Amino acid sequence: MSEAQPDINVAFVTPWYGADIPGGMEAETRRTAERLVHAGISAHILTTTIRDFFADWSKNHHKTTRETINGVPVRRFPVRRRDRAAFDAVNWRLMQNLPITPRQEQTYIRQMINCPDLYDHIRTAPASTLFLFIPYMFATTY
Image 1 (tube, rainbow, N blue to C red):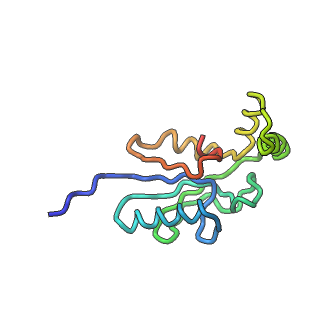
Image 2: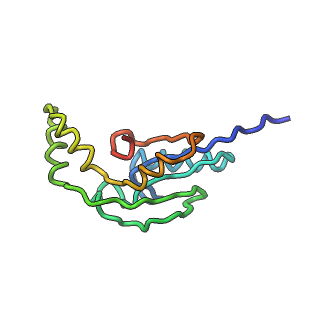
């Protein structure tokens, strides 16, 4: 007799997702989500409409939609415009290992990736949802 699988609902939250996006985080997210689904565990992707890391983070490349990629349900949320110059100025300081003020820290967070609908979805999701935020360093995590 086999043990019953617990009801698990895993949601990977990532700034971009697609079968053709290169990168270690992207490949690991795809691989893990696909394996979980193949094993019969409820897993899905919550992401933005941003194309990839190299794209303009305030451009909605993909449609706001629900789709399935390699067996994994994917839900995309639109992004809002951002002040790229303000973000880049603070990011430059961080990359130079220079201190930033609390106000600059808020600029960094608010001007990174703006996806209010995704944040609202997470906020109102069932308590049983297990969220995995990958990678940690983007606004989709905090």
